[in-house]
Length: 485
Image (cartoon, rainbow, N blue to C red):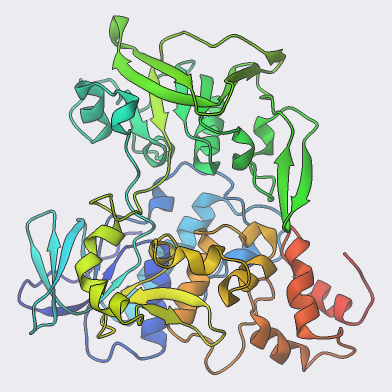
C-alpha cells in the first residue's frame, strides 16, 4: 500500500518518533487517540517496518498476543490457535500506518539517527546520517533494540567480507557472502543459489529462523553457536521443526526449557555447539572459509541427524551472523551511547525511569520528559534491564505472570505493553487482553464475572506456567470452575 506522507520541512519543529515498526506505530496511534499531539506534526525517522521485508514465516505468537494496544486494525482471527504469520502482522502494521496518515498526516524520512542534542529553542536537534538536522520539541525513540551486532574483531573477518556485511558493493549477479540474520531473512537481500552451503553463526531464535529459511531454500546448513542451541527453542514450539524428536522440556522458574543434547531433523543440517569463531575469510573460488576454536569451558560438539560427527571443513557460499543487537554503552551505535549525554542529568537524580500505574519500569526519559526511550529500545537499555530481570521487582513479577509465548524479554508483546503503559493507555479502564493484563486490570475484569477464583492474584500468578494464550470463553469457564488447565 502506497501512502503519501508530508514532505520534510527543515525549518519546522516536529514531534519526532524514531522508528517505523510496531512500537513506533503503537506510540503514534496512542498519542493521536489520546489527543496528546495537539497541533504538532509528527516526523517518523527510519526505514520501513522490518516485518514487511521478511519472507512470510510463522512468528511464534498466536493472534491474541498481537492485538497491539491503541491499534485501530487487528489480526483477522483473534481466536486462532496457531502462530501468526509475519506477512499478516506486517499487513496490520501497514494498515495502521495508513490509518494514522489519513487521520493526521505526518512526515517521514528514511534515514538513521546519529545523534540528539539539547540546544534550547527548539529544545532538541536530531542529527541524521543523511546530513540533515531535524528540529524537535519532543523525541520518542521506538526503533527497536539497536542495529544488528556485526562480527567482532576476534572473529577475524577480512576486509572484503566486512564491506559486504556493511552494505558495500558486490559483483553484479552475485550475493553478499557475509550478512546479518535480519538481512538473510529479508526478501530484498540477494541469496546464494538453491542447494548452496550456508553457515549460520549465533545461538538464539533469529539464528534458528535463518537455519529454517536455509533449509526451505534447499541449502546445506552448518549452525555454529558458542552455547548449546537449546536456547533457540522457545515455548511456542516455533522452531521445533528443526530438531529431531523426541523434544523434552523441563519447567525452570516458570519457563519450559528445552533440555538434553539436540540433533537436527534435516539430513542437510549440522549443529555445532561450544564454538568460538576465529576467522571468516575469502578462500578458494571466492567461497568463505570459517575457522573456529573451542569456546571457554566447553567441549565442541558437532551433530547431524544420525549423531555426533567430526567438525565440517567445507567452504561456504554465504555466512549469516545472527548474534544480537548493539545495546551497551561501549557500542557507539547503541541507543545507550547515543543518548548518554541526554539522559545523564535524569540518571544522576534517579528520575530517568518511566513508571506505570503498577510501578513497572516502562521506559526512560530525559530530565525534562521531552526525550523518551520506549519499547524494545528501552527494554534492552542497560539502565532498565535490571528492573525486568531482578526477581521481586514489580516488573519481574508481571513478566513472570505472562503466558510463556509472551515471556520474551524484548519481544513484541512486552514492547507493545510498555509503550502503551508509558502513554497511560489504560488510565480510564482496564487492559482487557487477558494475556497481558496486570493485577489492577484483572481485579476490574473479575468484578463483572460470576463465581470468581480466590483472587486476581491467584490468576495473575497461576497463568505464568501456561504456554498458549487464553481467550475470554476459556477465562469465563475457568472463573466459574468449569474447566482446568
